[in-house]
Image 1 (spheres, rainbow, N blue to C red):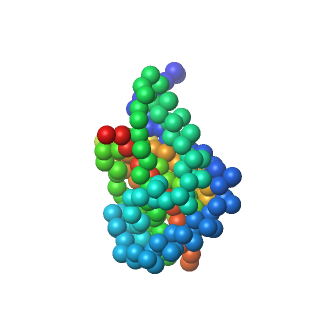
Image 2 (image 1 turned 30 degrees about the horizontal axis):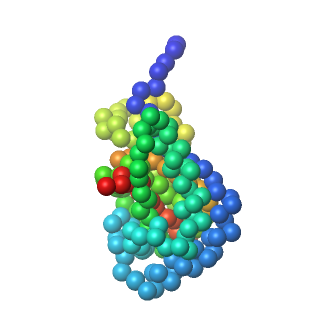
Length: 196
């Protein structure tokens, strides 16, 4: 039979191997920031640390900002090809210690959200995107298999890699699994926001 997929939700991804050479310096900078300001924003991170919403202004991360800009532009071009949308990026660090995780949350009032992975292992925990169709959660065919059969998934799990960027709609609920590694899981989260 022929079919049509309705209400698809797109998540964009790209690996930036050319940025791996910066990771150790960036990680060191984030550890220094954590020592200088040990209190966490704690919006969604548990057993870890979240930095301030100003990482995009730190010149030490300019190579990251420059490398990711074309990916954000391409995302906008796919969604709104005829519009000239002016936006800004707000970025912050997430560090999950052993046993740390991010609770399920969304990023309200943003165009898109993103995460870039600086330090992860196969024990660091996956990012989970929850199916936004509330009616499916109690459906008899709801599945968490990965990849799921068509129209039957309750969540999609993605194993992070160092240098991987994920861009997704800011309204898409997501969370991270527990970090079972003895070392920290470190990422940079971002929002693409409209310029006022």
